[in-house]
Length: 217
Image (cartoon, rainbow, N blue to C red):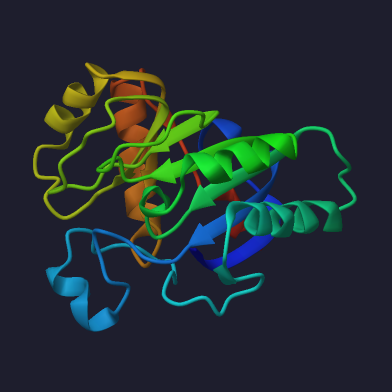
């Protein structure tokens, strides 16, 4: 059984795959925050701007098995008339590693999907994911130290020695490294900070949430 908040077609807005047509499948639940506002102040991750509670979003629901969920994802992809080529699905959350498993990976590969995950990196992942993006959270133990990309949202509470944190991640095996300014009232200041750090530490690149700028989900 899979609990899914929503499934929707969009363009990947962030990181190395920005601009690419994709279906996003957002799983319900997270291991770093309950999703309830009354719990935010005591959560490990306090800046999340995503609703991942319940199964009431577009395309959401309870899916009894991997084949049913794979069929639903395929149907959403076909809504855009994209056809059978270059299919791309991104699993996100919440924390998708709580639910993504080998059965679902196998079912989607049979539907010719390239499969990506956006994870906080605190849980082991099943083999067979084609693209892994790790977004670490301060205060959470990181177990995924090798991936296609790392996307660090800044500044998080606890980022008192941000350059030392960047240096630590620079010693890990990530093919691409991105700094992403946290959205909200301080977005301009956060973006300026990210730009300054990218200039100072050129292993990192700037990632903006381009989907928000163009009005896509």
